[in-house]
Image 1: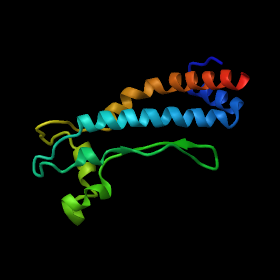
Image 2: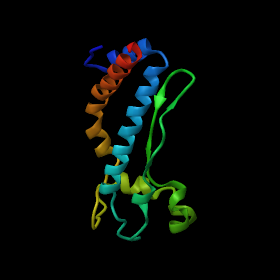
Image 3: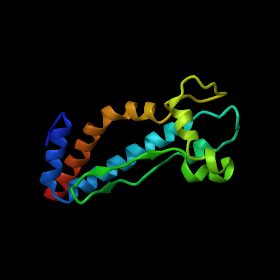
Length: 142
């Protein structure tokens, strides 16, 4: 199976039955882990609250498949993991502010610390998915 676009990847997945989505979920889990690791490297220090552990709050979810066949994965920063450190009001917004506001000054890190690694990895997703599907097709064909 050869393809150069996401539509071709989706068609390849359909032909493989259950093995297709499983291979796709493996690749998407790997990609999400790569984005999360790079996001932790780029995550800024909050100049007003050093050591907020924002970088430690960055994590990738496991890929899931909906009843309709949609496969999704996410990279998340912030949330309840920061609650003890930052208190009731700040924990749920600090990641958004740090990510979205390019005017904030940081000792290290930058705004768009999740978006940038995500955009860098996007061009590799379809080819890597297709490679995984090709390997799965070869395995199934035996």
